[in-house]
Amino acid sequence: MPPLQGAEQGKVVTRFPPEPNGYPHIGHAKAAIINSEYAKMYGGKCILRMDDTNPEAERMEYHAAIKVGLDWLGVKFDVVKSTSDDMEFFYEKGMELINSGKAYVCTCKRETISQNRKERKACKCSFRDIKQNNQGWEKMFEKYKPGEAIVRFRGDMKADNAVMRDPVLFRIIDEKHYTLGEKYRVWPSYDLAVAIEDSKDGITHAFRSKEFELRKDLINAILDELGMRKPYQDFFSRLEFKGMPISKRILKPLIEEGKVSWYDDPRLPTLEALRRRGIKAEAIKKFILSLGLTKANTLAPFDALEAFNRKFVDADSIRLFMVSKPKKLKVSNLPFSSIEIPNHPVNDMGKRKIEIDENILICGDDAQNITEGTQVRLLGLGNVEINKVGDELEGNFIEDGKTSNIQKIQWVPQKAAHEIKLLVPNQLFIDEQFNENSLEELEVYTEPHYLKLKEGEEIQFVRFGYCRKDSQNQAIFTHK
RNA sequence: GCUCCUGUGGUGUAGUCCGGCUAAGCAUACUGCCCUCUCAAGGCAGUGAUCUCGGGUUCAAAUCCCGACGGGAGCACCA
Image (cartoon, rainbow, N blue to C red; front, side, top):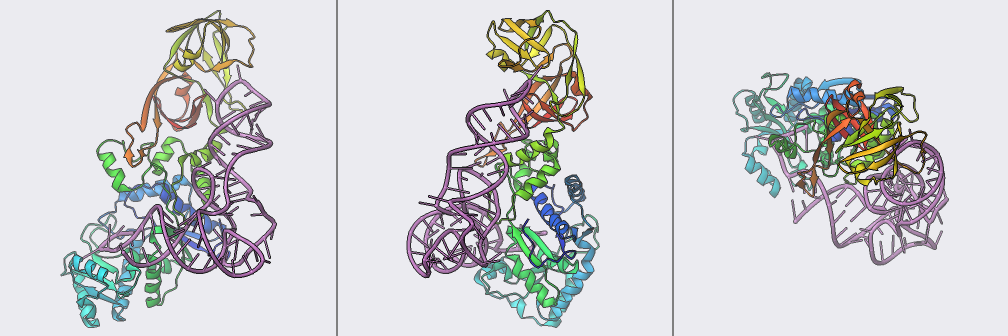
């Protein structure tokens, strides 16, 4: 990562402020990793701040999911807090702004406000004096109903930057907050909360995604009026995968319609889904760091992540045989009834014993390509000369067969073959269209050794690809 | 519509602030070879970008200036 502007060793404080309004996804990972890595780079601190100032959207469930996700990612924070911890402080600062004439209570209708913003016109409320604003402020805590009054920052209604046109500082929400219940009903807006929190928490460098870029001026203006210290702010592009939408607006209906099972569906870019699919946290981290801090908007291809993941996963994935569209191969003169096969080609991961008899299963696709009279090598077992093809193949075992220049295929003993469902996730959306074939479900057979593996273990089905054991009878394809 | 951000090989990026040391580095993808009882991993090599386009400044521009065009975002009592 490039050096930070104005950063002093040991004095950098960064932060990751997610709103607990949904399940964490790859976009959260990017923000969390960049901020925490910078803190690490300068021997500073990183704060996790749950940005919970909209009780309508936030839930404990999401709060917990974000923590679990971050934990899994291995991102560590020095301080964990919630924006709502500082409600009294926001009120104090809000009053300060009102009393210095930099904020006013507005009782206009939404439409009027919006219209005035477009026309760059001030509304009549902005002419009220400090005393009236103080009364209005009081009334917001008791009398006014939600929507009837808000506190606005006196920005510049003529500004080109639309967020400067007297933005909202406080509004009334009667919904129960997920931790505070009904204790408060006047809530700070994002801009006010971020400005004050970052300053108060001692944040020196704040990184967030590009869509907040225009708020920079506003945040600085608020802090200037309050005479509070301003952090350095920078922005990075949003991270999204091609054909894997992040937005709740798109994901929610998919789940409701049953097109996707849940937020951990392996086709999704949520942290939970990525984990379940077999993507390692270290791979996500490397991948994100490889993207750099660019502001150019791009759709990252998923195979870039896969390439990083493969490097992490290859070294300790057990190699196992798996056969799809099975065809029976009857092998005569097998000289032994069991065999030991190493679990990894180069690393020492032990061996497994496979009991065998004449009945062997091979892949349908391989069976198709075998012609009569040829030799194939059953990996780890030996060569077989095929003397009958068709629905059921037959062949003779050959002692000391050659290993080079011969078709090598994986196999499974029929009597102990264990059937599992293999989920193969594909791109969820193709050209904005939901891909009806985004999840293939294959019925496949593995060696019985599969049953001895731990849930969540990454395995490589030889000649097929890396997969993660999801349960005793289901695995998920990670990538090739 | 207005405002802001952005534009380097198939893809993701480094380099752009402080112009030359790079006719552009890395990764990934792709191709070939080596290794291998896997179509993985590993090793080696190769294809591939006049740095969106057009002007300008300069001895010299991906890098500075102007313009055009392409992409994204904001214009909420959401964050």
